[in-house]
View 1 (cartoon, one colour):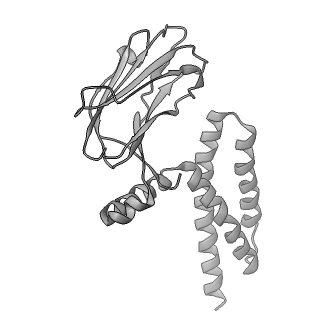
View 2 (view 1 turned 120 degrees about the vertical axis):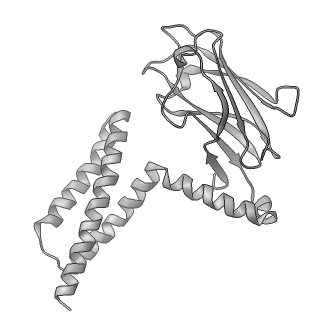
View 3 (view 1 turned 180 degrees about the vertical axis):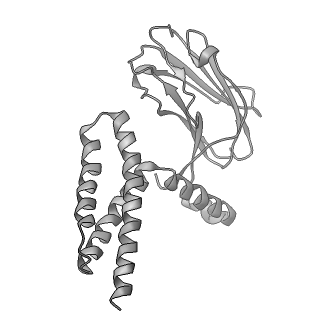
Amino acid sequence: GFFTVETIPTLEKIILPPESKLFKNNSLVARFKGILPHLGIVSIRFNTFDRINNDTLHFKIINEDNTEWFYEGSYKTDQFQPKKLFPFGFPEVPDSEGKTFVVILTSESGSPSSSVAVSRDLPIITTRYVLNLSTLKQKPILLFRFIGYKATNFISDLRFISYLMISFLPLCLYLLIYKKVKNRFGLFAFVMFGILIGIPRMASPPIVEIFSAVAVISLTILTIIFIRKIIRYNSKNV
């Protein structure tokens, strides 16, 4: 949602299971401090070893100011995606800012042939805060912080950047044609555009990520070259 903000917490303590693998009774323990109010999700990145694992992880979270666990829940590992963050949701904590939380994740039946591991890809853990308009209106400083975190979320989202570049490239092509800049590079760029956009739709997930990254870099370079050629053309014909 628009008022949801994802952050990377500073982990005050993290204890990983041996080799990061969650076998039976092995646990991940993480301790962090809330950055904003209304904490509602803690996401953890897992390595599924590219297989469907039949295990159940027991998740629980506590605010260190309390003596009882705030929330507990069990989750089947067959729904985890390779190297992706899995969200563990719980009732919002309105006063989470500045509070210290402890998360414990324990395997109930993990085995060498059917278990997940905590991924080493960063970030390992993220937190999400679900703010609301009334809270932001009451606290102007919180509003500015929200805008900063939200902007960071957009910039770090590869899909968002890809869509943004794809949206602007047709404008560059239009300007190229409108200004009658005749060269073969335009045709080459148009073909490359079609290839970079079309291939990921027919590929498997790992290849999609690779081609998406290549697409962003390539489209950025092409756009810069387009603009430079247009500027040079205009300067020669003024």
